[in-house]
Length: 169
Image 1 (cartoon, rainbow, N blue to C red):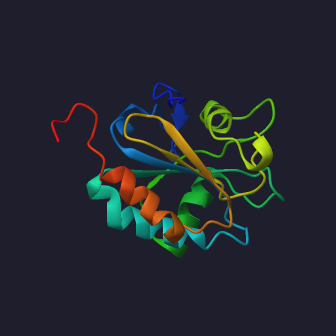
Image 2: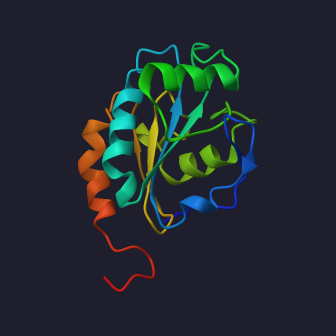
Image 3: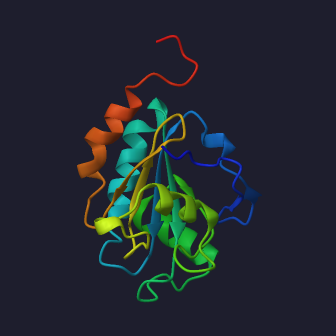
């Protein structure tokens, strides 16, 4: 099984450059997002998952993308304001990225290689494709845009209930 490389650089919506090391040991859900998409209301469900499970070790990482129907045209500040105002998002959101093509962000290159889509497709087909990563960094599964955050709760709970790496439980 392929592991997520936590040292991969990322940029927050606030413009801070960091990496994913803060999420080592967490169950991570990575989502490519957009503000003007039919699936945009999934922000509400993602925020609900964040509120329910963050204290148990779930980290949700949103990465806005404008590659699908140009449904994320805004600048990072506009995206941040939209997410906060309309959905109360307070999980980690990152600077807009490409998820496909030569300029695809390395996080998505890793995720797509480890968890291909239907019929083995590597490409992400649309906004709100989601990837679940285990506490040990193993990239477990890809979810389609139509898979709602609520429909993933049992998979997330199962991962959260597994012992954290290095624990005695």
